[in-house]
Amino acid sequence: IKKGGVAVDFTMGNGHDTAWLSKAVGENGKVYAFDIQEKALESTRNTLKSENCPDNCTLICDSHSNVLNYVHEKICVGVFNLGYLPGSGNKALTTLRPTTKMAVEAAISLLDTDSIILIAVYPGHEEGRLEGEMLDEKLSALPQKQYSVSCLRIVNAPDCPFFYLIEKN
Image (cartoon, rainbow, N blue to C red):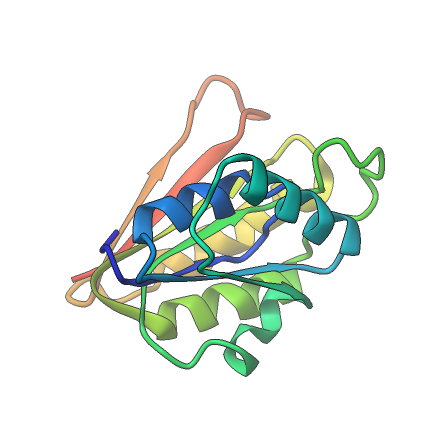
């Protein structure tokens, strides 16, 4: 993560990743954060304020799959925290394979050299499990000379969240 860089929180939720990214890129950096729920934007605004974050965030009430309509510069980091909005009580409203696939493809196209994307996957619910399978297939096909892709998974706890890390070489 580069001071002054551009970061994207593809799934802002309650804003904790957005706040972390805001501080990491600093006052001269830029953070774009996406969520389809107005409740997430409100929660994120409160988190940014309570954590005294720099005024460097653009909160967008739209699907992460539409990122290319908003972000036109190379990014130094992208973060996905898939699943549902924590604390919302609505576990039926989750990220979905088609939009997640589009968002991850867009994120990869925006990734600057020596930069990363981190994706947290929650296989404890059906759509999360299917998102993980889709991502495994998609990311394992990336060219090795351009990207390094790692997966951190607890193999004897199949419902545990796991992570993909994509680095552009």
